[in-house]
Amino acid sequence: MDHNHRHYGPRIGNYLGKPIFEKIEDREGTYVFDRIAQCDVEGCPLDQLDRGEMLIPPGLIYRQV
Image 1: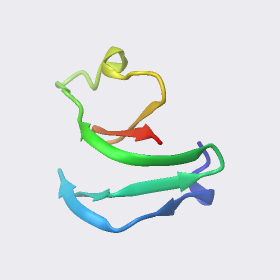
Image 2: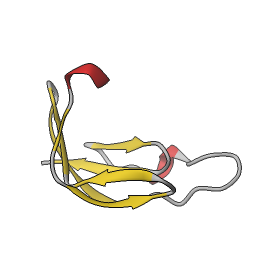
Image 3: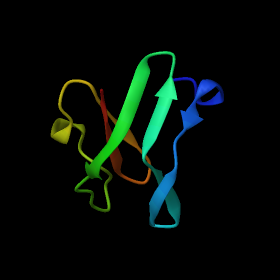
Image 4: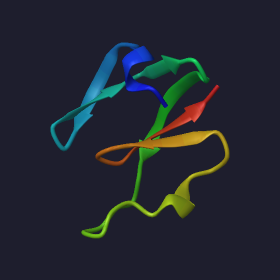
């Protein structure tokens, strides 16, 4: 996903010092915030993502609508 072409919706909170946006739009579609990933010191396992979801550091999961 190209970070330069993203459009962000309203900020609805923060997690580990990073903003949580209600939605993110880019060329591939619109994604809405869904949940916080289960992460540990080694990172965030990608097997917790379903089809149409993306993981944004530091562990925010957005799903495509």
